[in-house]
Image: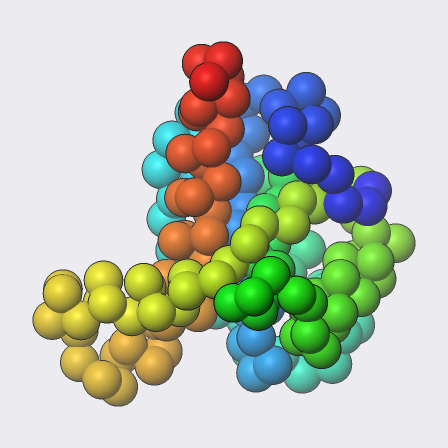
Length: 158
């Protein structure tokens, strides 16, 4: 399945299954997974990128292990709202993944997600070395949590 809107995810994604959040980097893929009620995002182990086929297999295995029903992927939009090469690469990644899975994808504006994730890790007094290992999954959790908060608002009708 290709990309859909967050609003469509409410009716498309199966109930009782968590959502995944992805932060697609050049060296790693940060992964986070929600709880079953779509209220809380939790970081998972990062996937070290090699080549698309290997990355896709590792990602799909993780998503299957967590019984994910939909995926929120961070779209790296520039501060002025335009899309550069990284956003195009993310869109291409989703197009390629759509050929390998029926899971719905939702793009989520990820501006400043890595900055916010790093601040949170600093506030938790995580060492510089450990921050480097955890930043992408923390960013994925930040991206997913933003989408979950918006979904909660949509379900309330606001």
